[in-house]
Amino acid sequence: MAAKGSQPMSRRLDRLKSWAKGIKRDVLVLWLAARDRRVHWSVKAAAALIAAYALSPIDLIPDFIPIVGYLDDLLIVPLGVALVVRMIPCDVIHELRVQSAAIMERPVSRAGAVLVVLSWLAFAQVLGAAAWTATLG
Image 1 (cartoon, rainbow, N blue to C red):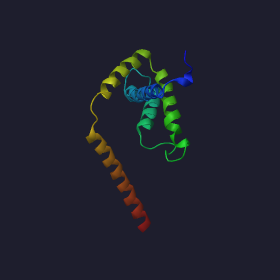
Image 2 (image 1 turned 135 degrees about the horizontal axis):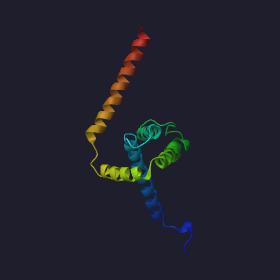
Image 3 (image 1 turned 135 degrees about the vertical axis):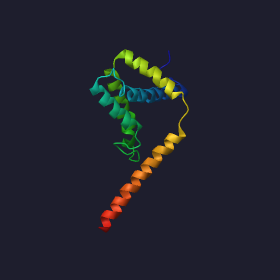
Image 4 (image 1 turned 90 degrees about the vertical axis):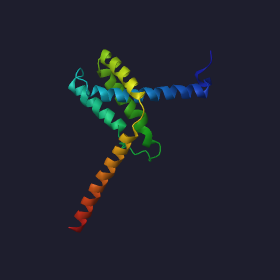
């Protein structure tokens, strides 16, 4: 039997990719669970918070900070996902995982991405205009 350290690098990479895909699927599961009537309201709130944080481009710890910048992506999000998934009933989780797998197979909406970017730009413009007005007044 081969030692763990002798595993081929490609096999480790495949396992890591599989783990990351599972996290991505479970973030979608949490988003769906936040809207499911069978999930307790407190679990819905936690699921919505974790999913929103995981899907948000804004991080608690900015990614440009060396080493700790990716800490939230590598620890906080997976631990939060795992914790909330355990609070959801097994039959609901199974059903939501099937539903999320079907959603993930759909093509990506470029129009949705453009809408999000335009929304952020409009928000930035409103903030900029408010700041400009405040400095003039």
